[in-house]
Each structure stands twice: as structure tokens, then as C-alpha cells.
Image (tube, rainbow, N blue to C red; front, top):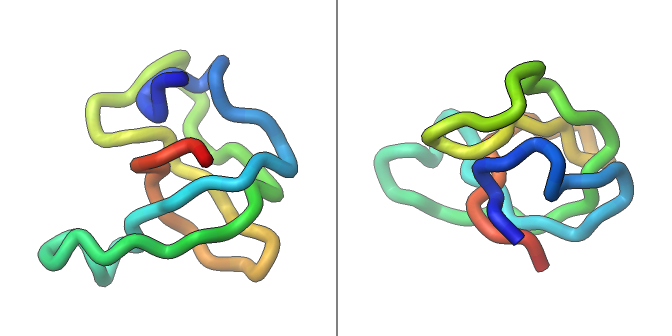
Length: 63
């Protein structure tokens, strides 16, 4: 599964994301996808999603 391909990410899936404020440190945040925000089929930095707790970040790992 590729975190840079939109088709590999589904609602409710457990993922690690990098939040905007953590881009320099690459600190990962774990959560479940509530909404996929990237419209294009792929993105070089990872697909942007909203987690169930409301945080927004780019997927770096699909768990």
C-alpha cells in the first residue's frame, strides 16, 4: 500500500500522518481517516487527510 496514492487510502483506515507543524521534525501522529482531502489520484508528499479527532496531515504510513 502506497501512502502517496489516493486509491490505497480508505475512510476508517488506521494511518500515521505528519501534521503541518511537525513537517520539520517528521513527528508522526497515529489516527483513523475520517475524510480524504487531496483530490488528485496521487501526491509526492502523501495524501492529505482529516483524522477522526479533527487533525489534518499527510499520510506517511498505512497501518
